[in-house]
Image (cartoon, rainbow, N blue to C red; front, side):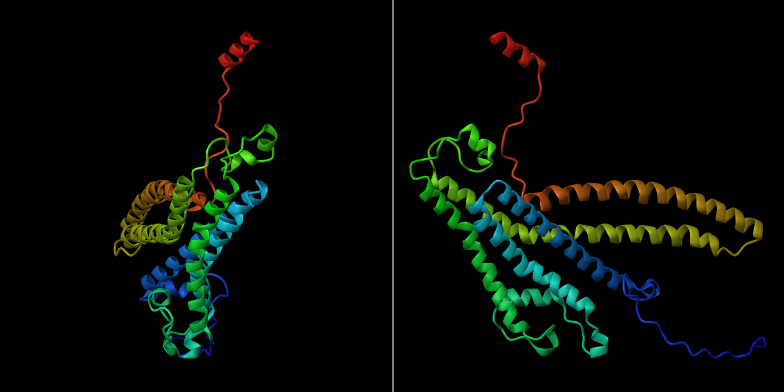
Length: 320
């Protein structure tokens, strides 16, 4: 083709990539709104997945220590409660992601409104514009009823069974019982206090029900960290490096400006993004593991830790 001639290209737009985020969002005018929505949803998916894994660890503990009352009357209702509300939310997120709303010519329903109406407008008919799938108006009330049933399921059966089992107080455990894992549970010598057991179970139930909400919201810190990191990266690049690259000056001055700008940009990137942001993300990660994840299965009971002391060993030998 000659210079200045008009060239027509019949190019068919490619479909979005099957995995990951379409790079075209990086230059879109509404990229911030899209990034906010996407990162918020992916944080919830990661959080619910980790909490379900924590409950799976509790299942493993129940089987290992043969704690069948805890398995049937704590672990199972905890699974069902978390799945019926927040597992369902993850299902709606994935369904919304995999549905071509533009091809259907419909606006994508707001998932937060869907979840709130599911709880606050129980049994109310769902408008056609808010429907995500067929039968949604039947499934959601059943899930809410299942979540409500799980609360007394967690609260009442275990204390009542323990009271029936220990009418005459706790039995003393032998060394053989400890070797089988009996010392990991609630059994110990002494009088059985039903009131104390009931209060303990009530606290556990309230903590789990309220924690299912607060723990899920706590995982949104992943969204906040990601937005902060992306925002700082963009500011450093545009305000420091890009300004130097677009500087209208002589070649020598332009080259010197680019070298100086690169030094400043590299130093700020390393100190802020790679050092401070990494430490901040590490602290948040430790908190999510310790609070949101480990409170699903870790109790901290069992045998008291006795550190090795050579003086104590010498005293025992003297006594012998």
